[in-house]
Image 1 (cartoon, rainbow, N blue to C red):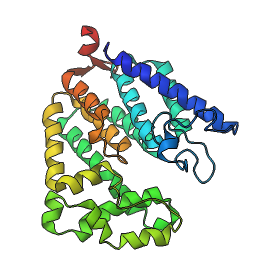
Image 2 (image 1 turned 30 degrees about the horizontal axis):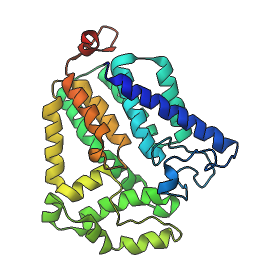
Image 3 (image 1 turned 180 degrees about the horizontal axis):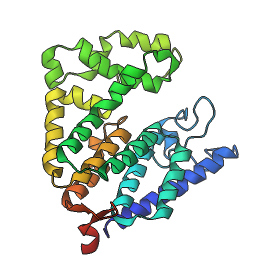
Image 4 (image 1 turned 45 degrees about the vertical axis):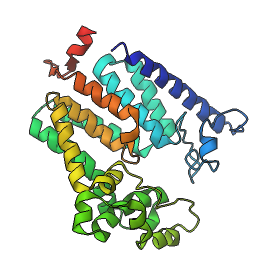
Length: 294
């Protein structure tokens, strides 16, 4: 637990900077002059991820966009739930969510607390494994089934649907099983034309990447690779049932990003692997022997 203090220190710095960004934007001060766009200015001078079309303020802190910032907030929620249960930290995290307006983070909160409530009444390993598996699949299925008119939504939603549609409709069976080159698939698909018809003013490059953790995984390794990865996680975490709650919620917040290349994913994962013994007391509060042994 002592090693977590460095993460918490960094998290506090990020949240403070996010509040600073919000105030600078709220009072309409110059973002560049007041250094409120680090490191975003070097990455995207259009600042589309800071201010969306209806002029609501969105802040990314030191990350490149709110969706990236939300990943670190989600880890903060998980660590606080495991080790600290500090209400002040929860308050800061919720306030950071409000000023980032990350849709992924809002989804994380619903799933995180919803699954924790379910966990009060059951810790059945098979059920938790099914929930964990569904956390990979439900975000794209939800987008595809419930969003059938792309023109009503922003380009970011569109670009997170198309990779999955192309994967299952424009690849052969062998490619679906073992993966295929994403760029070549999209460049040869009808969606290159469709995105510019629906969003003529967009500067998004749909062939750049699948814009999704699962999408990147499918194109890189196919369905076989995804199944192996899920089974690997099951073997590593099978003695820590609540870890599937944490990782199921975390899969929601990382849906937009191929986070397997981020150290924060593996640090969180290995912390859960290294701390496998959890139990529920009579009040259904989650306790950890790691806390007592730290």
